[in-house]
Length: 84
Image (cartoon, rainbow, N blue to C red; front, side, top):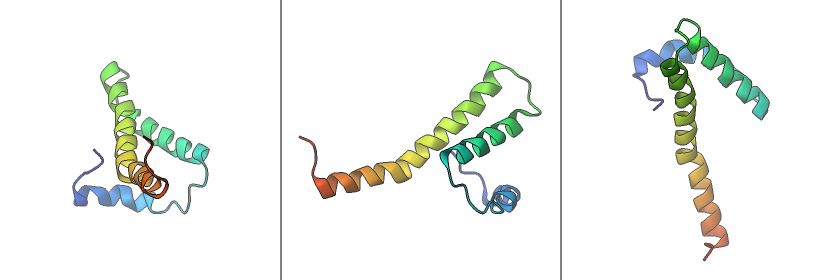
């Protein structure tokens, strides 16, 4: 998952923290795609590296869903009642 050692985060955070805002889904997709291209820049184009790249994005989406979307769905269920 997206958890690397704190000392390894500093270089990435230095640049990522400079982003003031990502306002649209298109902007977010653009940023994610650029990061994936950076990852692939010095790698051989082969199934395993392409797979690593796409699955990293999917695993981050899974973690985001687990931490945020699932909680929001639980709140909505508690507020509005479960579907029986």
